[in-house]
Each structure stands twice: as C-alpha cells, then as structure tokens.
Amino acid sequence: MDPVALARDLVRCNSVTPADGGAQAVLINALENLGFAVTKLKYGNIENFFAERAAPGPHLCFAGHTDVVPPGEGWTHDPFSAEEVEGIVYGRGAVDMKGSIAAFTAAAAAMKGHISFLITGDEEGEAINGTVKVLEWMREQGKIPDFCVVGEPTSQARLGDVVKVGRRGSLNAKITMPGRQGHAAYPHLAENAVHKLIPVLAALAGARLDEGNEFFPASTLQITTVDVGNPVTNVIPGQAVAGLNIRFNNAHTGASLTAWLREVLDRHAPDAELQVSVPGEAFLTQPGKEIETLSKAIEQVTGKAPERNTAGGTSDARFIARYCPVAEFGLVGATMHKVDEAVPVADILQLTGIYKSLIGAFCA
Image (cartoon, rainbow, N blue to C red; front, side, top):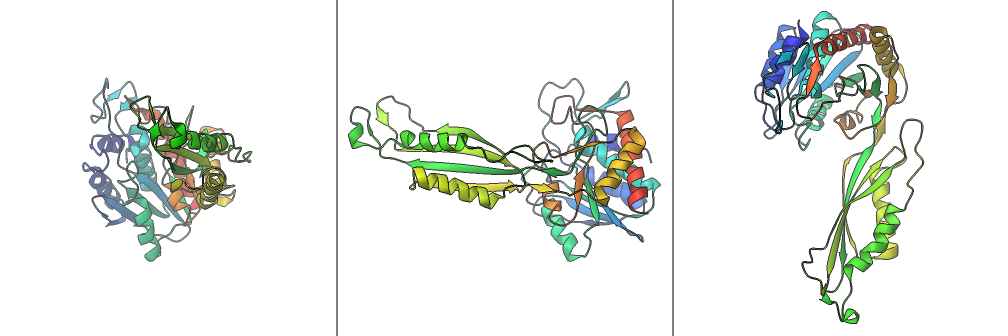
C-alpha cells in the first residue's frame, strides 16, 4: 500500500469538524481490504469507527482523528487538493493527522499482529461524541488494547525527535465577584466589585503551584480575561468577572486545584462565585515495555533515540490513559493548524517504516 496516495486521498476530503467529508469511508475501504473488521460508531452527528484485525499476541491500537480545523485564508495551495510540489504534500490535515493515519494503515498492510484502529471525527471539536464514547464501547466489548499510539504530530525539528508520554491537565475557572453599584463620588454608598477582585487575582497570579518534575514543567496559572462591562467613568461597578486557565502537571488534579481556588476565594472574598471546568486531567505513562518498544522502533529507523516529554496542550490521549498505556507519536508539527499545512513525502514514508518496526516488535 502507498501511504502517500492514501494520505492525499484523505486530505482531499473536506472534513472540517464536525463534517466527515467522506474521509472515514476512504479509510474504512482501505482497512476492509486489509482484512479489518470495521464497526461504525456514530454518536450525535459525529462519525467514528473501530477496526480490528485480531491475531495471537499483544493488542496494539492506533488512535487518530479524521476531522480537521478550518483552513482559513491565504493559502497558496488549495487546502483540500492535496497538491504535491517538489516532494511536499500540501493540505489541511496533512500533518494533523491524516498523514500519520495513512502511514499506520500502510504499516498494518505490511505487518502481522493484533492491530486495531480507533478513529474519531470529534478531536478538533468538543470531544464529546468521539474517542471518549468509542472507548466506552471498546470496554464493553472487551476490546481495550495493551498499548495505544496516538498519531498526533509530536515531532518538533525532525521526524522522531519527540515522543509524548503524557500531557498536562487543563482547568478553566470563572470568578464572579459581586459588589454594589453606586456613584463614583459616593463610594461609601457602594461596594466596588473590582476592588474586591484585585486581591484575589493578585493572590492567584502570585502563587507558585509547584516546581515541576522529571517529565513535567511547573504548573502555570494565567488570568485570561477581566470583564466589568462599565461604559462610563462615574459608576462604581456592581459586578466583575475574571477568567483563568491552569495548565497543571501530575502533582495536582482538577479537584485539588478547585479546592485551592475556593480556599483563596474564601480568604479574600467568600461571597464570590466560582465555576470550574476541567477539559482534561494530567496523565503520565510510566517508563515500561510499551514506551521502550516505541522508542527503539524510532531509533532503529532514524538512528537517534527520541526525547520523551509532556509538552503541549490536550489531546484524546487524555481519555485513552484511563484505560491502557498510551503514547503520542507522529509527524513534525511545525505547520499544523497553519496556512499551507504540509508534509514531506519522505516523512510519511519514514513514519511508515517506524510504525512497521513498532508493530513487528510489539505484536510479536
């Protein structure tokens, strides 16, 4: 199987979240021709599927997404033409992550073993009707793998230089500070909500959450917005709202950070309202057979061992980590989500070789 041809076929599908654009049909056809049994799993308006070719030995799963972000303006190549120019394929999703999907499919075509695919159309969207629900189905059906590789574009300067073995968690908080509106000339008759909010934000912004560890940097808190909605200069605001985001390592959980935020508010302004959402918890896949096998496969093909880190935002690996060991490894991400997203043909071919090496070593 030619992974470049398959990658171009996938890129030609306009699968901007939540649309599928025919991308999963292209992939399903390729996998069924390789002997995979495919189960389509539609949740809400999102297309997903699980494909499996069972065999004796450890079960290796590849997780990926066929949905892409909108292309935006200013492309020099049609974002859905998959044009190849001087050995480079251009198009939305070429790197994130249709090229990786094609590479693993081609690797599976050449190798034996218990292999499966978890494919969603909801990674770039709300991530509600995608991987998280497919995993629930897999658990019910007894299909949880021994190891899962997510084909996110983890490489930085060159293919194979980074494997992600975990991710930081993310917490969003909204603080609503009540006050009492009044005339600026008569502050004794009012209660300034902004004045009450400032000490809270100073305490939060000045806190050192931790010092980081071997795999994670220090956790960080960023105030993302402060809103009063006051269009005039002579009115004391009766309410002020602040938003913040915490990117946290495995020293914390969403629950522990929520409790800390509430404790800070209780010290400074116990009447403040706190709303919290946690899109993802921090996770770390501990060093072991799975990560070692992937690292050795990369080194065998590229000649260099990859760095292991946890940098970046969230991915669907945060859901998979609840069920089995997981790592993320794929193409160079320099152009992902950018205008003229592109992948060298040579990288797709080399990535196919790495995935072949991984399947051969892990599934033996």
